[in-house]
Image 1 (cartoon, rainbow, N blue to C red):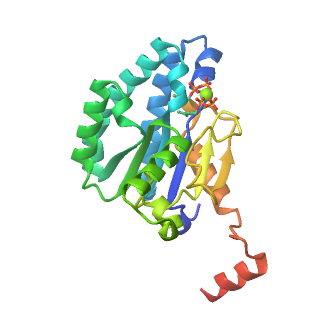
Image 2: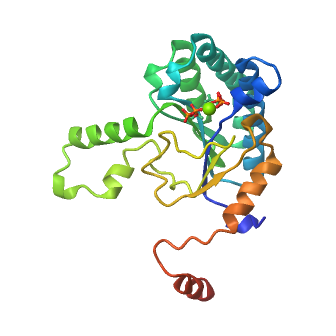
Length: 242
Ligand code: IPE
Ligand code: IPE
Ligand code: MG
């Protein structure tokens, strides 16, 4: 892996906790517990290699349709995670950000998140964005409402007007989207921001997604040729000149 050409921003759809648990005769919550450990390892690894922005899809606005017991197990795990990890984030300069409708989360979760975001705000080494109670279409609707509320005239609306009102404002667009556990879909994730991202799908279930698997994804990313509409010859000429 070439440490000089890491993606600036990696967005992950962590999927397969339930299937991982089922295959082991465990309950879904146990799968999520194993998934939380994987999150911890991957965050550490990304921080170590110097990745600047990492976004994890942790709870979608559609996930409310899951059984109540599973939803509350997920939130308890999140609380445990914050308790254990915030001190470490502080130490390592990781800033926690939340993408999604925080106000729609249970009070205890909301309170813990707000505190974690505030205490880690000065981080500077890496942004760890948790997409929580997140849906991409809702994010775009929210941005449009803000544009209208700000009174921006129609002819002044640019791509930047929209981008600056998304949760990702101030961060680069994801260069790489990873989805674990075999599904090849985006499930309402960062649709505006990933217009030109590279996509990486792996059959590995999220709890088994180790730093070595992450390294494989990064290597796959580095083997891609990003052309942004140009021909390969133009891209080659530019990198020879650079
Ligand atoms: C991903 O694992 C975690 C969340 C969506 C919170 P799943 O729970 O979706 O696992 P599968 O897809 O049922 O295996
Ligand atoms: C997507 O996973 C959301 C998260 C990873 C939090 P799901 O497992 O809920 O996705 P779908 O609904 O199967 O596409
Ligand atoms: Mg799933």
